Image (cartoon, rainbow, N blue to C red; front, top):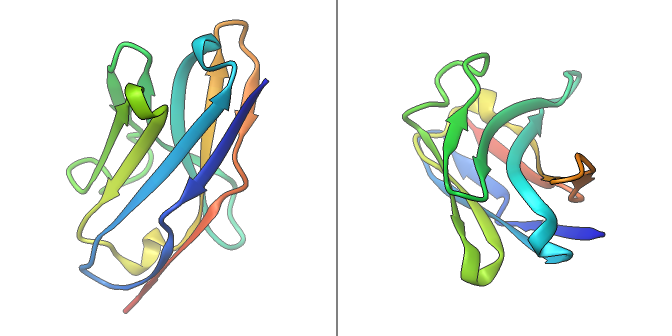
Length: 119
């Protein structure tokens, strides 16, 4: 089992920055990839960025404008994955979820953290 706890969300003005954190606990060694998803009001949850256990990163092409503004990273010593979000826009508003996928393809979700960007 893997437990994920997100933090770092909040209310920020457009153009501002936030850094989200996701701390993993439990069967850490079983984690293959971790990712950040977001869900805007009335929309489906969508992938924002992912990072492998080896540190390779990818960003969702379908989420316009994320690449170049958002950066996913990890600190293995702290079992933590980050999402640095810069130049935030009102359309970035939503609940941001951390997801882990194990080597056995099991999926784990955190409880989410709210990000609100005011114009």
